[in-house]
Length: 140
Image 1 (spheres, rainbow, N blue to C red):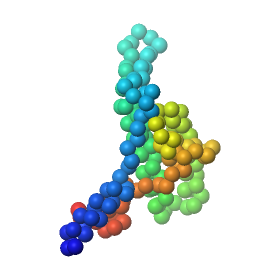
Image 2: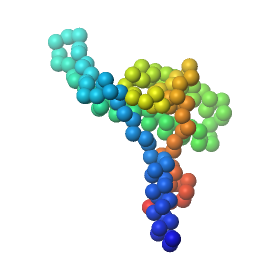
Image 3: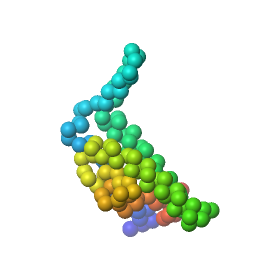
Image 4: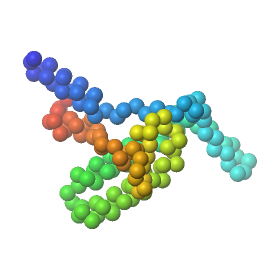
């Protein structure tokens, strides 16, 4: 195995291990939509469920990145980190409303009540960029 083969292997391993797993919409919501109907005569808005799920997942991904940056911050005290983690946990809790969208329980949000197998209860995954940086593969 030459150096290029090793690099290709490591790159493939990183992508396989650290790429986010696809999240499936629960069967009953597939093909569905959300209708936002205003209380006055203005036009409502219809949003396909798969688009709405992607937006909810984007919020979750942003919270995960925020959590990782918070954990890696050297400039915050332990008390400040704990305080910010409390806000993140409350945000996850607010998102539990959307757990009905997920096909698999492992994808569900967990708030301060804990107990589930949602985002806060899973092993935290790093982004592909973070994994590459950790392995010194930034130039690729």
